[in-house]
Length: 269
Image (tube, rainbow, N blue to C red):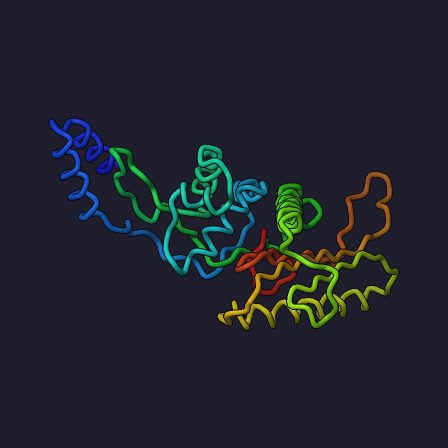
């Protein structure tokens, strides 16, 4: 980054437009992706700083875009803004926060009209919230739930945008390519039944994860958001809140990002 700053100063001191253009082309031709640590297959999240970085729907959206584009290469802030239909200036603070938390990294830089432009890539293929951060007495418990709530807000915003644009359809039967399913209910069940239900849902998510993204021409982006939790009895006065081992929250955001704390593969947020 220091070298890029010096290059930019050299560019500014060029005596003519032709000299500046020639210097810029030379610098960009010589520049390549900066060496950096290998991309993690999965990152385990258990610290407050990372959880706070994840506790914002827009930052989750930025991370989603970069992770979705991981196979095609890093993106600039301008390209991320275009993908999210957001003003570029609105993203800089959030990008820096994700970079500071180590969730994304600068994969390369180039000079554009005398300005150093960074290209960003994700630092991991998936994220997982460590189960222990939800334990009673955990100092990061509130931060972990804030990250989950941000994921819920993200899904809500994406759904509203897609629905208002006429891109989803809940009116079709099971034969419809875009058929949606909505269900909201509460049941009283035995703890072992809750565990079994959780396992059944996790098996579906594991199957999807194993299949990976479809390359079929008629493939559609599918969003799956599931929140399953058991509500325990009200704690006695002065007692610490009890946790329900069978509780799970799972969200899969297309095309490659999701959220889980159930022990299975996925991207957790």
